[in-house]
Length: 630
Image 1 (tube, rainbow, N blue to C red):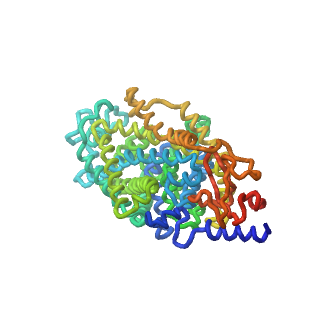
Image 2: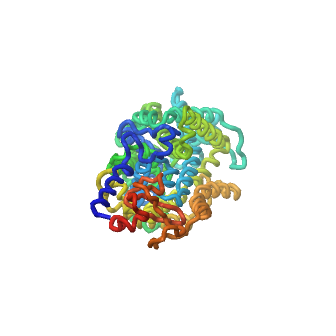
Image 3: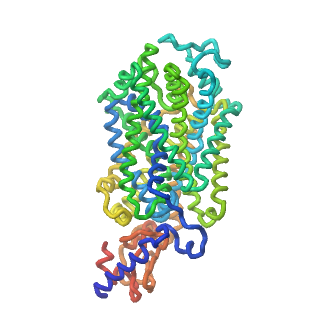
């Protein structure tokens, strides 16, 4: 076969097959388009829609209430050392991997793995289990925030005094620096908002005011995503931008308060001795994976709506910088106010520093009640809290829906079936979430938070994502695909991270997390019963087991050999080899859009099968040996 003819064959193949036709998604199956089984996949109206959706998805509550506390607890400025190591060695590479994978395949978090590496389709199922559990309990925080926002419109902030019906004689006005009795703010949250019971065994009644707030937030979430990226891309113009404006306003107000300098010093003062504690590194790793919303399938789903030639690499770097900068700046806004509160009470900042819901619903409301115009600052804070959480919530739900719809596109994309399906998912999630707005709901919430979407689960998924892309599919081949999309090859650091650095960090952090594991306690006092700890581990293992389980299923279903076929020769029908049909073009595995890859059978599955084959040729390697060596 002449060299000129071989090269022309390759050129025609890339032109006709690999590159998407105008108006068509590279991930759309030809047979579905021909039969009209489902509408063409929609795309973002503009790149701003994508940028704001991703920014809203991963800039959330964790940036405001978790990172500053972890920074202060783990050595102040010294914590930034492990933070940036995990950022550049794990967070950014996996974030870029997921967005690029979605853009390349035009598929959601499950079906993208079926195209890239079918043996690891379980990664997608694991991600969906995690994000489904996360969506059930994360939105409960928004219900609390909405309830607090309504409470702000009373003549006096309910948590600003002990003159309320839910207070007891043990409530104090917090004027005594070393008083051991519960403060009015703690009483409001525990007795009025939560009506917390004695333990998870005593679930009690549903708090219907919180149940209505939870319903309201789910309804808002539904209408934010019910029209797909058309509605999501417009809502984020408000939900993803206003929180930044409000954060800046709170920052300016905070740094002008007396005692703010001491709070900021407490936040950043480096203690390098803390770096010898493995828990510091575990906190850094889990914070990165939480704040970048990776291993949940959402970033892959958002990337799947990009145009094929979109420069996702550039935007992923910009968005990563925005995310980490938001976390860092939030620390100034939070600790300046905590420094003011500590000075007003005459106590050490360590006595008022909180993390998570304790910061949002006890410490910060307590601080704003001491400021001039407390109602105004309380309203501003809870609106910011709601918007930060809301766009994270509906972006994660959008990722969940996209992944599930892509499993059955010909059925769920017809008519109003997608909207009905979204309504069903939201309603079922709401019903499950009602267990967390009961009198014992806080115990259920903490159980989900500690196990269902724990750092261990995310590290497990991230490890296998890197193995699947870098070692099974091939990091160089994925770089070829990215170059095809954006026009150039990204910095080699990404490839090195997928291949070595990220798996190493994930394994190390995973092992240390298990070694340092301690059973869950609520408020450092209440010990969960053994059966509830078992439920928690069941939630965690439900997602983690998906990956090995799917691998086993694929092996059982496979008819071919379990290793790569290396001997081709001139045998035409050897079991396990791929015989090419005598056609102008042969695509053995039609769903793939993966250029420059040789025929491989890995664990009995045809991983990548794309070659231009001349009409008179039965075996690509025999006819075009130069090109087949790529």
